[in-house]
Image 1: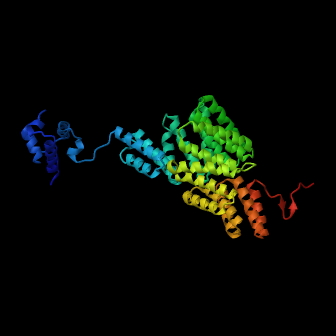
Image 2: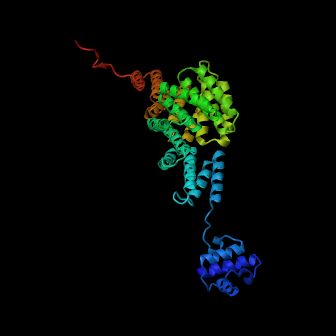
Image 3: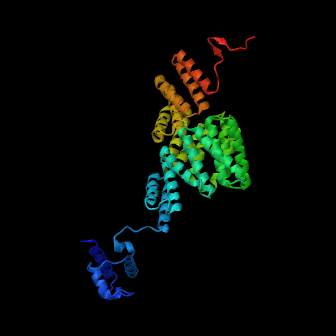
Length: 445
């Protein structure tokens, strides 16, 4: 059957389905005989003629031509909303497929807003699924496009997501440079504080904390709380309290950390972001575990509640963070087998890209293996964790990791290697050698 016959066959089938005669379908310059010739495949209709017939038949033009229907903007918006729902429900793969389906139709030139939303959705779904390097590629693409967009929120949202991904990948310097450059541009604009601006500050607080620059992190945390208070936005204030508590905790000020994180919990408990609340419970549990008087049972209860929520609304990475904290709680409770099981499951979920958190799980395994008496396995896990932390630019944390390794080596009787590990620890903490060929460096007179 040729193309004309196929078109004619479709016209005839739809006319009969609509219970119309050829005379009923004719009109507007089309005679019944012309309709008959069309159905017989003996005339070539123009698109205007087909559009007239489609209107009278109550069908889409594509049903007559056989070409795929071009989705309307409304149809594409519905697809985007469905993808967003899938992402919020913890199904990043379905969301990714939906966003890419929209991208297969919308183009950056013809439908820029739809394309931008779909591209941003692809990046978020990839990040949610733990595919960080792919997510970064899409986010960098969006950043190059968003520079020319008047919407400041879009630009900052992309920068914040990039900072999160670079942080997880261990590229702390890049994350800080990007965020600081963006903050500098915002200051030049002399804008009033905004929710998205506070979120950027809070994100930067987290990156500085990871790198061990607690002075800068503390300054920015205070600034974030002040700005959040001035705009009276609960979400911004909750995020600022959350990151400030992490800084206080890292500085050893557990009492203030608890106060701040409980304020954050009170804010998030009043909202409807179940995923954020669960992740905040993870942070709260870590403060309880690492306080001067550890509360592992209370932390374990918080983490079980968090895990139950994250199993339904969280990403695999959210779940991995919760499992890591559970491993630490089990270690505190002397449930070594459970601690190892949680840490190993977390490592499987984290994959190869989440270097910082993977390093922490290796250190957890080292502690559990050492407690079991398996010194060789403990040594291997600790060394792996220390190397990963150092490669991730988390110098201060790497220093602690090397010190833990030194203790394990000392327990294993490997004194020379223990001394070497202690020196690695001192180097990461910023200590420089002050002796040359056994002699102290002094000024000569």
